[in-house]
Amino acid sequence: MEFKGITNLMADLEEEKLMVCVDEILSLDPSREEGLGVIEACRRGTEKVGTLFEAGEYFAGDLLLAGQLFKEVKKRLEPVVGSKMDDLKSGAIALGPVYGDGQGDGNEIFRHLVEMAGFIVINPCYKDSLQHSTN
Image 1 (cartoon, rainbow, N blue to C red):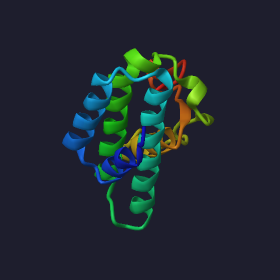
Image 2 (image 1 turned 45 degrees about the horizontal axis):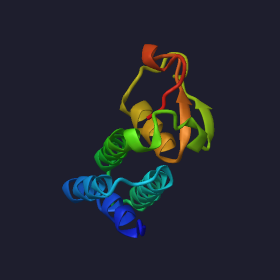
Image 3 (image 1 turned 180 degrees about the horizontal axis):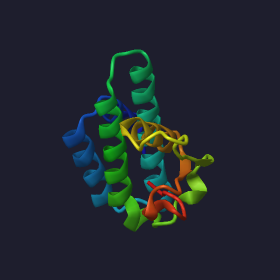
Image 4 (image 1 turned 60 degrees about the vertical axis):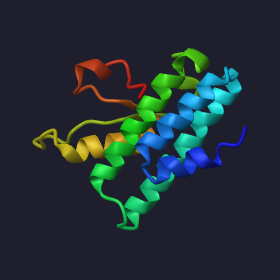
């Protein structure tokens, strides 16, 4: 299977077209490896989103949308690839506030960026991520 189109749809934040494409792939009863290929293609697309953000062409909201799209794709592919995808991660990063600094949008944006880069985010400030985040 060729996944370049999926990478481009993710990078262009084409939500509807991306989900239709993922659903079409699911209708073909893909192997686990093919499902992982879709996830990898989406990860490459999110990297492009990050690059476009750094270049000033995308904004913080675009980063958040890319993170949500990636999360939805992984959710749809879970029956094919399984729910345990930590072995696909690049590593782990601990995230927490500086003393006296409040939890803000910047923390969320950074968390999404490092998750899109393939890291497990450990954040003791969030009850649901005391173990780690598998977004």
